Image 1 (cartoon, helix red, strand yellow):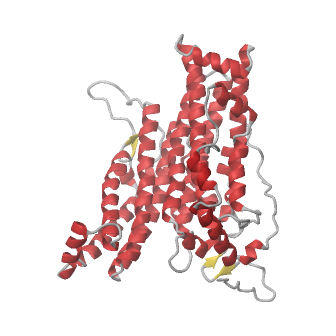
Image 2 (image 1 turned 180 degrees about the vertical axis):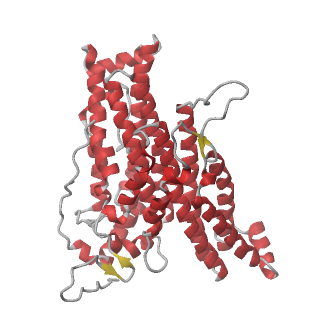
Length: 494
């Protein structure tokens, strides 16, 4: 249904547009509170593209997840108190999703630790342990623990008398079509996963110079960024924003490491370049996971309910993801890698094959091979992200010319073309060809994919039907003129 916009009184300056749910975001940056995230990343004056900055960013992602987990856990408590396990199980599903991201962040911290060994401050029997950063210092974690205690109290209180028999029956004989079983099973997953990521983030060694926890992560700034992402009523707008804020933080940090890698291999500092690319790759795992959680948890109607509040915001406006990661640094990385491989006088493809064949002949040969390998592995994660990113327009916009909120004529087709355009970069294609590596996430001749793309498949029918539903629900969007996106930010050039 359409939500009327209140009109400003005569003589007043126009303010933010609003609907019945609240503010309609004027831009992508306002929607996801990017200025607060950027301010948090500047906290502590840590060296750019350093081990400490990477570790700090992992904890910032965890902070955002924990702040959202607290709100979601209280919603579970609320619906259990109202004897509505079916609705509570919907929010518990989101709890599982955010714990999946936290698990990935814990794994990222471990990967960074492996890639960059932190030495103890001195040696010998009286050596002091290395400095470390710990999630135990997080006020967001403490708030989440208190929310879990409240939820457990509500649940346990509902298990008295006949309620206990209902729980025993559900656990013993129920399956996922039983709302109570689904709720309890999600909470079991959350409790088990929580012990894993909390242990992984409990004492992460750092280099000297890391500020105290709250100063390093910018806890107050992140709390503000999360708190302001809210609307009236019970929506998943906050979770939608959360699953953009975490990737924004991580991508911004990963971009710094990619730029540092480019500068290093230009200067023949190959081991440093390999390490920087590996750190960037480690940081992007949770970015891919965030897209997957969005897909698995957000229903089409839940997205449509707050879609108007997204305003003209679009992922294409993201400076960290769309512009720097997938355009500026992406092009620079692969163009420079091609030029670097050809410095010996051979054509880049021939030089790449030679590196592959000679990789075991000497340590320098292996190091050159390792540099290219890390770049290929990084691009594989880019491909994973693009695949997961396609789910949203498939599931929430559909096909048949459904416009995006910025008037793109067909949202799904546009996102698909963006993936194809990225893989068409000549240097990327030539280097992949030289290593016999496939580019692209689909295979036109594969029978299963060909069937699903065909006119008679259920998937084609559902995409078409989703498009029809979306166009009917947002007729005013279909009338929008397309305004091509033009960035105000300069090209990022290492």
